[in-house]
Amino acid sequence: MGPTSSGKTGMAVELVQRFPFEIINVDSAQVYRGMDIGTGKPDKATLSTAPHRLIDIKDPSEAYSASDFREDAIQEIGNVLTLGKTPLLVGGTMLYFKVLRDGLAAMPHADAEIRSEIETLAKEKGWEEVHQKLAQVDPDSAQRIHPNDPQRLQRALEIYLVSGKTMSQFHAEEQEKKGKEGVALPFNLHYFAIQPEDRDVLHKQIAHRFMQMLEDGLLKEVSILYQREDLHEMLPSIKSVGYRQVWQHLAGELSYDAMVEKSIIATRQLAKRQLTWLRSWENLRSLRDPSGKSIDTVLKYVESTAI
Image (cartoon, rainbow, N blue to C red; front, side, top):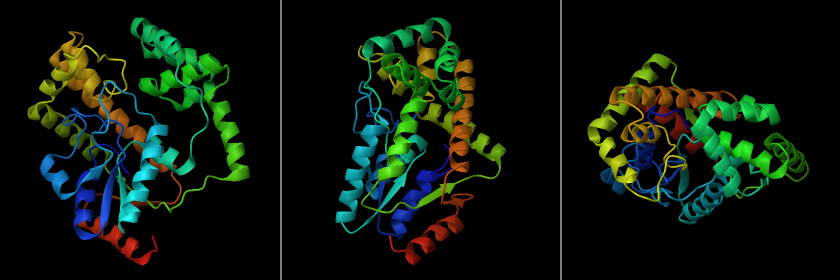
């Protein structure tokens, strides 16, 4: 685990060369085909050396939920174990790691009409207004969810409008159920995270990485998606950091310079949220950087532990 731009993929690829690991992707944007540059997806040469499971499994027009991930991940973990190898789950979508570990509360299914109403409100008055509306009916969720996290904001408000119960209530009921029954997984989970000590260095890496994405053809990549009639800015895929801002630039809503600035700021905010998740993660083995020393720490642990 680790924040965006911290070197997770590079470390994972090196680990695969040194240990019988097989990588499983834990990135909510890398599941989408045709979204390569902006998601930091490994290139073809890297994937040929270190294949990643759960990459390129969905079209950008399709939704992919945390529940979908949990089901797919458990299946892929089992497949890797059957091969006599060790699954190495790599990514920055902390919610996916959490639902794998803890399971999911039984939430109401998505409601297209309610979702459309929320999207209309966001388009007319902004996501801050959606956040305020959520705070009125579910203050606990509003406190947890950042105003710049539209996908989770939309889902939390949708749950209340569909069921009359808050997301917090569903989670509380699930916790009570778990306390009685527990969440059983047919394998053990071991948690490692790259946690950079110098935030300024991470911010520079984020800015450099986004500029490199632009150099590599991010505008062209998003332009191809923008031209598709079945895609729009409210889809989870297009809401991804970087894609949303470039999409707004192509729509004439942002200048090029504003798009660059907002993309870098949004990526920094994402990294901050990821680090917040990690600070409260139990049984976490912290790796300060993706250096050889950190890799040796992982290898020593693996060699000394019955995984």
